[in-house]
Length: 393
Image (cartoon, rainbow, N blue to C red):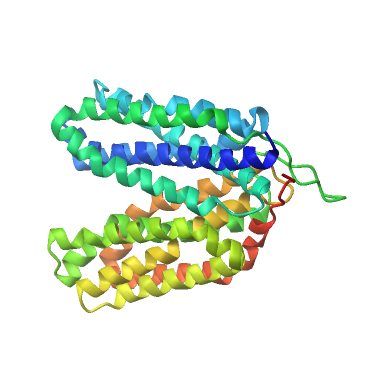
């Protein structure tokens, strides 16, 4: 099999890994409210447990780069994708609160390490194909989340929570096992630039340019978290929406993201990473600013959907840039930027809630729009995302 044929197979294999990862996270979402009566806990305790899951994911991302450097991207992805399969049933079947906290931390860690490894593997595929595939890979994650979440509630209603978790793990397991043999192998890195330092795999790389990419990922993901956690409340409190209508904000935002992610690789391949990131940031900023200023809930929902079109391709481009960052192994660069980016999802709920309580959601969303403008202004820093070199067929 030629390198090009292997890369084409690897492209769909890594897409399947994104699909499986997103499917498990989507299946997890309808399980969350059921933890309250099962363990007799309050919403505050549940919030702390979700924080534990997030800290497990972000903490594990710190070490994922070193694991990849030692064992290789493909091997790490195989191990963590297999380890993820029983994690959801372990959480659902936890007999007490202490075990629940432990299994949630483990679920977060496994999902986090798999996330870094599959993004690093996608960078390998991009290098072999000589074109972008990161945005559509994230589109498959969104697709998996959609199916896992939309089917998960129905399965719980008919089979119960334990049955749903076992079903979700079985589906994810089949996807992973079918994809594993075709994952892109490591290697065939671009030749080092003369005089350039060898690739590093430090736990926390001392590279200001890399951390700037991390800040850009943070600024790109905090708005996503803000729509997920607070858009419905904003529509209800400040625009008078009912519960059903307010839920459309994130639904259409997420749907627009998924559609645009599947189109995003073609856009980036045509116009380049810098131009795509710049215009994506401006579109996302315009959408959030429009939502902040909207006089009606219908207009605000439309603006949130427009923002989703812009947000969709920002993080995939930044991950490609991190994976191609000079002087660092792909796993190390992606681990650092992923950790900072997902910290935005982790920090966003409490921070945004605190700010909105004092200044209101309109001012809060307007300020987040300015964060996206900052990412657009810094877009040239992601030029290395296009530094992929095709191999001969």
